[in-house]
Amino acid sequence: MKKLLMGTAGLLVAGSQAFAADMPVKAVPVAPVAIFSWTGFYIGGNAGYSWGRATTDQIDATSTTTTTRLFRGTTPPANEIIGVSPFVAVPGVFPQVTTTNALTATSGRADVNGFVGGGQVGYNWQKDFWVWGFETDLQWSGERGSFSTCDVAGCAVGSTFGAASHQLRWFGTARARVGWVPTQKVLLYATGGLAYGRINSDYVSGINGNVLTAASVSTTRLGWTVGAGAEAALDNRWSIKAEYLYVDYGSFGSGVGRAPAWKAPCSAIGR
Image (cartoon, one colour):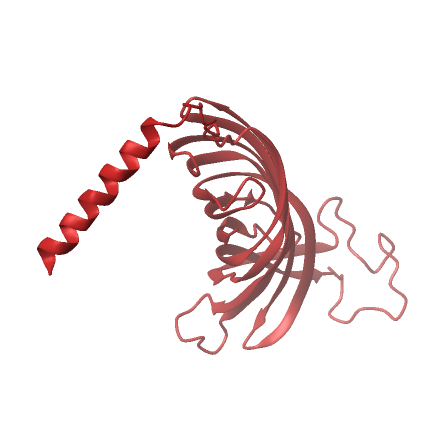
């Protein structure tokens, strides 16, 4: 059976060749092979998750003021008039004021995590296997976290406590991109540039769990970001990418001390 099939195939090929030799020869047009390019504008959306850290150093100051009046006798009069008998008026001394200051400090770190999502727009230029571009994005953020601590281990009686909560409301970046194209529709790239975000922070401090001081700070911070990603083109109009960004918003102060020093959020954003 095997030899019969092979022989039949040979006959068909030969017959085809003999038939074709008697027909006019015509050129058959060949469609050109399309070359994909990353050059051009793009716009898209993204969603992901972000992990962050916020370090807070709180310094609390307490003061005690004692005022001492000097009298000629042992009993002060009903009407106190400074510099008039029976007072002893001593310039620079009367009345005597003594102030005692004490400082306590607490420090802690909060994990500021949450989902992020937003959109981005950019432009690419491709030259051979290299791609340069610029991208800007704006993200809503659900990142938040808090901590509480004491200046004495175990929060013993008389110890000072401090607590802080932080929330990154939104953030954005403006970044340059440089990439390499291992195949036509795959782009590997590094990115970096400016970052900015809105941070809300609340602080409280007190003694033995009793709140003595509270403050809130809301500020828009400038920082920097670096990251990397991989992008794959699905067709001439659509692509999908995964990207990791590290963002640092620096440190800032408030009325309760020096707080917080934000290091991150480190955003792993799938786009």
